[in-house]
Length: 305
Image 1 (tube, helix red, strand yellow):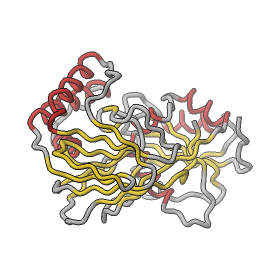
Image 2 (cartoon, helix red, strand yellow):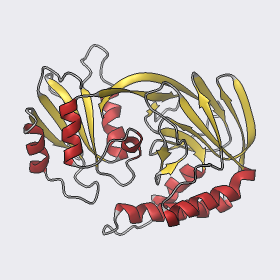
Image 3 (cartoon, helix red, strand yellow):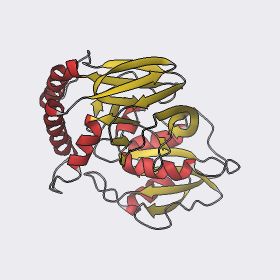
Image 4 (cartoon, one colour):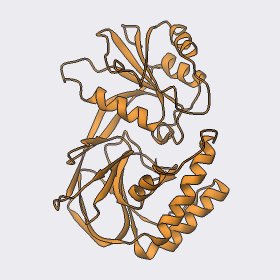
């Protein structure tokens, strides 16, 4: 059990549109104050959500992966001389990939336990040389995943759908895209070792899963100072499509993944003709012929687990 902060103020950032359950403002504030903290509630939809009081000891982010990334982006951009607040997560989104890798459970009892035990883990992030996205928490890559994200953006999914139904729709679309996606010749340099091939995707991962809970790096740990690189080549297409379909119908993942997995401890360089990449859940048109360079920044954020 770690030592709790001397300051007892919480900045609670909430996405009220996320998830299937009703987490009212009152219910969230009552839980925080019952742990002995004062609480400033802000909706991620409001203009002042990023304004922290100087006495803030803990930032709670209640939302999905997009809300976590948006809030973390602001927290990581704070000046080096400012005190770094602790972070706690209440995962209430559709996929919750980041929280699941850290084994952070959903629900107020789990959040209360994390606050009371005060056991932080130091989280790594990736720094990338792209103009519109400088870092990632989850992963970045090119190929099938950005194409899936682009198509999902225009699908009209009923608001009554559950998170499980949304994930099933995304997995079905992923299988369709993977079956017909055109591979691209690419080069990936990982810790000075060169890998070339005709790739359906190149994914650099800080956590286990991306997108619709697609577990591309089963042993990834965002606290170990290294990344995993998943490479899907043309010859692996059929096995990958079967893997996605089996996962969608059974909900179970095969212990043997049909793509190549490599570890990176220092830096990664990606050169491919794809003009669309994703950085976490952001899509970026990348037209520069220069390689994408990814560097690891270990232990830059403290998250209660």
